[in-house]
Image (cartoon, rainbow, N blue to C red):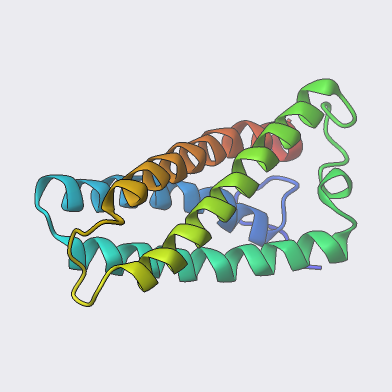
Length: 158
């Protein structure tokens, strides 16, 4: 559906963009966490999370459209030496688990936080729950990001 990617692999351009986006997303998440934990800069933390959430929602929606019109992840990863192997399949499954959990946690936390925290955002009774789910969201996003690179390699490079 989409044109070939710019990294010189079998991936299309959207797979290249989504994979490289983790190189930006993960450090920005760390900066956002640092701002709120060390600087108590709740407004910029909120702003960063909203921008990341909206951007990722758009990119993931387009990516899901790409997958659905291309026949799915197993179809677009055909042609490599790992096609149909347990290595590629398990990498896909593990990445999907992290990605789905991160999406559910992050989307739920953003929506709930917009409701529970005032404007400008300040700590309140929801803060402890927010920290717990924020930590879970970061862990699952790091999991999604770190599994994206081997998935890209096994699915599109090798």
